Image (tube, rainbow, N blue to C red; front, side):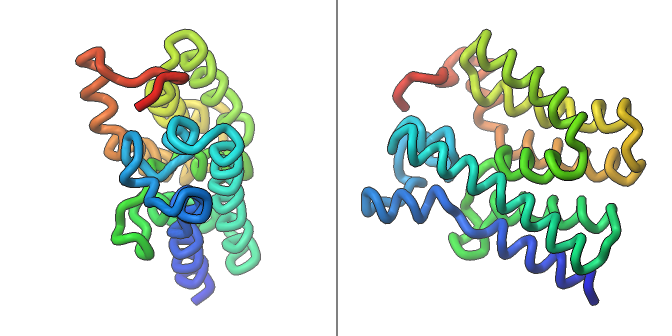
Length: 196
């Protein structure tokens, strides 16, 4: 019972779109009709501003952490804690409150992995940040972060279940970034600092 409750609450928590509501409050518009159309921090940066974008990034991180925390309280089991984190990412990507049109889940993923696999998240994150600094492609950094997670989690000897579950995170990230991947290959992807 506790496991199902943890997953359900995590999904609903993940479904709270801070980018949507902050944009609605500040601008009276739907963030999904602005810029890239993505309900996330990068699109907030490009279309609303640095402050709101930072707020969204931090809040999306925190909801991933809270989802993990709820699972710890309800189950105390590491595998269910990671599963709840994934449920929060699913909620962020496909939110029930917004017709299943959400963001790409990277900030929420950072929140989840920072609590459960900190060293692995730091290593994968360092690679991602380096790629963003060199190329100014946030999407490339996000993809490298997602792809590097299972490898780093395996190398740093976290629970085996974390390795398998992290592959789910990687697959979701690549699915949500499919349009970005196409634009990266075509050389038409927007760089950090450019207006959409």
